[in-house]
Image (cartoon, rainbow, N blue to C red):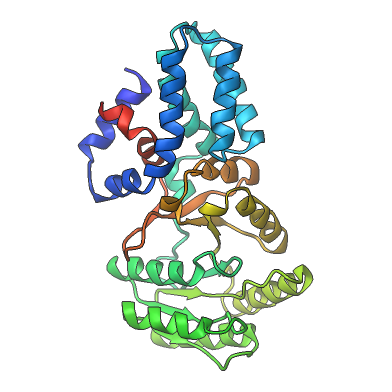
Length: 328
């Protein structure tokens, strides 16, 4: 049974709301990437060097990333030789399979996507990222998600410099029914984190979600600020923060890669939250980030609704990319 057929059987059996969200959220990338791959396969009678050159261009246009595309195409060429593939139609299966393989890179899906939640204790999750990527919205949506799973949540308004950032987080807190620990605008973010941890401990909260400033004008200041925040958190709770999630805007494509590199230098990023994946035709950035940065994408934003923040699954992602082909 081919990889496509296995995907089809698995995800049409589990045609739940989440699978539908991946399908709907990736429609722009699917129309661009999968549509062009299908056209390519229809136009060629054999799998040759020209076929691979065109495939490279399609993948690069979807922001899969040049390095990742070169590796992927090399793997595809080897697979074509190994399986003695002549018919381009057989390439659909191989491409889908290799996209999942590249993302997994030897790790299983649960290990890659699961948040490091400390059962029976306080979990601290730190959010980093530049202004405008949807960081505060992501924190609000994750608070809603965790609450719906039965966990108690507290928010820390550590972005004390951006005008309106504290108020924005408070608005989300009210919306999802979660308290926000804050200080006056311009306060020391590390002091806010200290207060938030004491409050979380006193209330027996399960998860503390911490916002941070997203200024990039001065990298040295940003690094020092994040280091100080992390130092305060780990002093109060050994082993924390349990996750440092970098929020990136999928619509910015390769610019998101630049931000990932910068924040990886500034702090130990453990996972990526990719927002606005539904708003771009360049959803291949998921693969580039995973392959070139060695950081897993843990959560993806697939729409505007409260429950559109979803745990990332590479198989559902590939299903979403090729859903039209799978269902035809």
